[in-house]
Image 1 (spheres, rainbow, N blue to C red):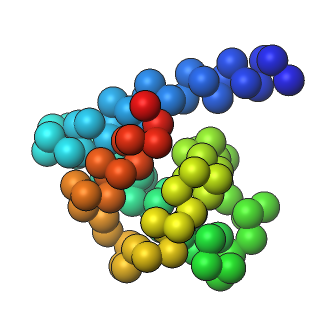
Image 2: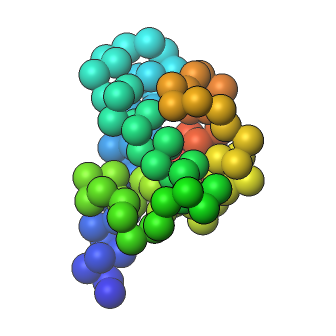
Length: 94
């Protein structure tokens, strides 16, 4: 268990950096992947998708959103997100 916790904790700085870059309009290469993960979490939160079908690439990020940002996910529209969404998610990761 400690090994997986350690692995997940290493994911936090990565996602913080990506979100900060998106907010600052720098290095937008990760926008598609982040937006896709947020959309996937939103679909699970709304009951349109099973948590077991989440892709491995952003599993930690999606499950973090489901446990700590679920109410906000339910309010999101569409599949492309903005600075306000990224800022809210950044707050839960810090």
